[in-house]
Amino acid sequence: MERITGLKRTGYCGTFRASDVGREITVYGWVQRQRNLGGLIFIDLRDRTGLLQLAFDENTDRAVFEKAASVRSEYVLAAVGTVRERSAKTDKIATGDIEVFVTELRILAKSETTPFEIVENSQTAETTRLKYRYLDLRRPDLQKNILLRSKIAKITRDYFYDNDFVEIETPILMKSTPEGARDFLVPSRLHNGNFYALPQSPQLYKQLSMVAGFDRYIQIARCFRDEDLRADRQPEFTQIDLEMSFVDVEDVLQMIEGYIKTLFKKALDVDITTPLPRLTFAEAMDRYGSDKPDTRFGMELYDLSETVKNSGFGVFDGALAAGGTVRGFTAKNAVTALSRKEIDKLTEHAKGIGAKGLAWIRLTPDGIASSFGKFVSEETMDAILKAANAETGDVVLIVADSKKTLALTVLGTLRNEVAKKLDIIKEGYNLLWIVEFPFFDWDEETQTWVAMHHPFTAPMDECLPYLETDKGAVRAKAYDLVLNGIELSSGSIRITDPALQSRIFTLLGLSEEEAQLKFGYLLDAFRFGPPPHGGCALGLDRLVMQMIGAESLRDVVAYPKLKDATEAMTECPSPADRAQLDLLGIQLKD
Image 1 (tube, helix red, strand yellow):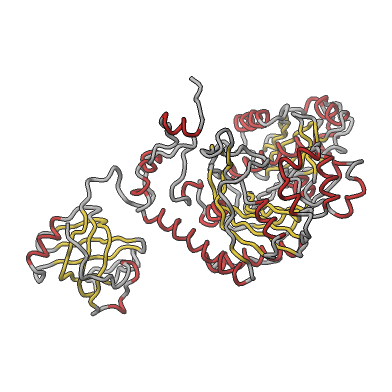
Image 2 (cartoon, rainbow, N blue to C red):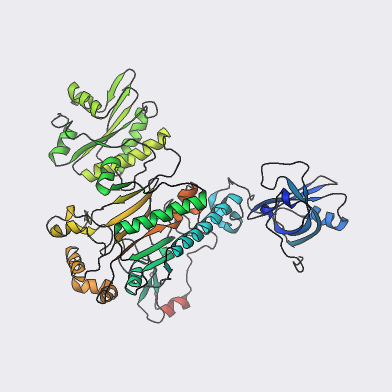
């Protein structure tokens, strides 16, 4: 292989234009393809900025021409030559008006035939592409994603630096703290039997940074959670993590809105209108059945409880008698798409997420068909259709349950499924805030009240008098940023009053000893003048995924894990040898 000695790159392949005609340039890259037409050879050279055509003809030095004839796809080349106009121009690539007449060519590395072609929108199985991820990352569409992610990281740092934030790195090896998911544990060699945890978030460290007086903290932080994977979840992920002192909810929301507006404009040239819409948690659940609603389409939920009261239909009457609710939504012009067969699928889906069933009405041109029509009077049916604003061609879907939250959640899920089937989800970026989350959440499994966010979240001031007497009514100074039905960010104002924090721990069933064991270092710090503070964290991976419309986080993460949390390329996780385990004091079960 030849060396690059004496050659200095003039620019990247995709950056040259017609204004460069006549310039002598030096470029490096990979061979996308070579076309040998006998007395004429063309090579498409590719780097991360795009393609540039190299030309060789009868005026080319013979040794250079023969070398060009020998190259194959994915060879690495250095080429020196003069930019000239291209005889057969194309608008398919940015450099389609020009080519480079090559006077010097060096083969820097050869390549075997790759397991798949390096092209956009590859149809090769993802498992194969992930096994050879370094080749997959050569594909222009995937490189574009990773380059945008890098640009977003720079815009992020610039914005927060301009707003007086200080970037602080927090530990990767830390104490295990309860944060809602399983920790990844790291055994200690120096302290056999003890373990570090990888951070689920830098939550406590960033609060300590406020106590330390840094005022405004920012970190693009790596985080880890040992939980099952899905399209928008990886075991390791990246957060844009921030915390601010001397603020309340409004200050944090305005700072994030400024960031979002700046980011979308600079990264995508998209204008985001601020202030962003806001819904309380209660409003979001009542209208959309979700605390992360997709507002790109309508089909809002409505309450039919009063309409069907004493209807004579046991499902409705039973749910209401148990203190529950009857809710529904109307799918407009959906009677063709939502056939009986499709509704049966939706019913099974509803049952799979906790519903006892799904009531429905189809308003066909031939009349009304309903799963419960024979159990209710004509007057009741007319009242339901009026409340549902339903007309011929529409489908009404209804869930009744003794638990209001379950009925709403099921309908919220079905709402999204139906929108996909009807293809009514509009293009665009619908951002909104969900505010005033419940402070407590009832855990059915343990039959206890738990913190919906984390125990350092501050309750709203007006809720303090009934913390002990009406937990279900207590609202928190907590907020989520939602984009197109995906939670991008979650945050809150924190508790810094030791007396209130002790009160909250007691209400959550944490003794003073347990609290000290789990959070002692933070509680100790709060004895020494903690400033009022709050913050949030935005999921960088999810943000990029939504901005480019990717279907999976694997499209925006350079080296992702598969669904079973393995990495196909390096074949991790892998066994440790006996000597390593002995050093750590670990014995494996057979």
